[in-house]
Image (cartoon, rainbow, N blue to C red):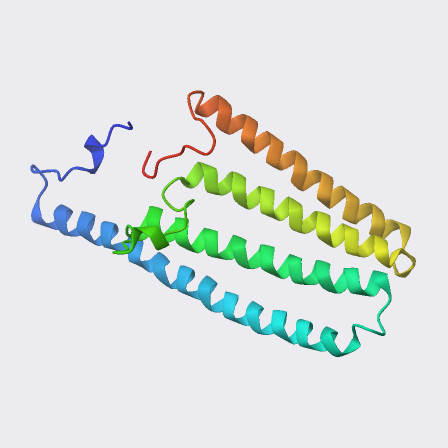
Length: 188
């Protein structure tokens, strides 16, 4: 466990210093609007999700197989982005602002208490890599609409995100050699 002595109140500090430290500590609440904004953006994504779904339903019998797959990939893409946003909002709020409390423990997401900030970074980068892969797959269904340079850049971006994920996992393993993925504890 990390040494938390530097977070205990400094009893020798003067009243001005104690007020300053209290103000800085309360400053964590400035992050709360970011997490509320992420949750609000999920609502916008939900509206877009249903708009695309309801547009596809009447056209399902006239769409080609590749058009159907593109619609499905788009819906999966939006779901993954929403999952990522929710995960960042939950873990960020729980880790940096205030512990999330629920009286109904069976309703809590299983990953909420088992994901620390290190795990969140890896999960976020993994989600971004999957989203980039889906975007690239969508491009290949309509490959003739893209120039060779655009295709190269899309592949380079996917490879770069994937390499970043591997490097981040490797650095996390070096920094935390006893860390077992999937068994993280909040606040470590």
